[in-house]
Image (cartoon, rainbow, N blue to C red):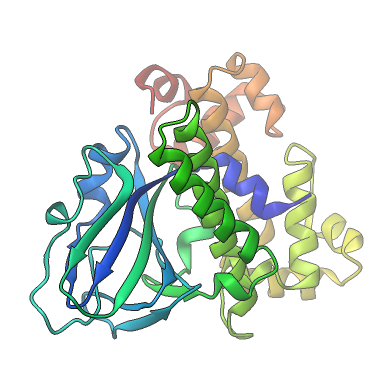
Length: 317
């Protein structure tokens, strides 16, 4: 079981490119909060992440309250929580609003020239809408701003070539170009996450760190592969070839919750997705996430979300 892919499927990741920028120093603009522009870029999206791929040149980025970072050609600037941030050839010039560069109401992938007469930077910006029915483990411990050296990664050259193809395809308005661009954008975001996981410090806590630990990652894979199974810590320890206490302690340390607590929450995430998609009656959904009785499932769901499964489905949460 590929746990990262499994979790990304549950949040219904959807992406698109929104700026193909030919920038000349000096230039500097502010990207609004994802929450503020989500309804313009992706109506109905709950959360919005932003990525900026530097194809040529370099630029700086900064979120409020944190140190600026510098990105060179072949690197991606990631703003996974959708914080408002400043992007530019330098951060000392007055930043204009993003609307002066591109209209988020009508994304345009034809190359846009902006700035002065100085050094050139080719920049491709993309947004990623993701939804979650509980605080999402992938995003919980990711920093507000970071870079991933895409070009040096095994899939980097292929993704960069795909982005360049998408830009030309979109500019020609070929049939299906929007769909192709969306899929490439989603691959870009996934590769950025993979790059972050591989580059995390060894002592970095969180769910993503758990994917790098052989015993914890195996435990997660087992629970994700068979979420309805009557798992116990003893059974998971046996399958992961470690002791019960070592697994429980290591899992709690990295993931932030004991194995059975994590499994209970993951089951509710799956159940919420089934309810949203009308995948069966309550009894069938309860059984599908490991509950023998509908009453026990109702109680667990209400503890997690504050409403009954029936109310959740009716309200279209």
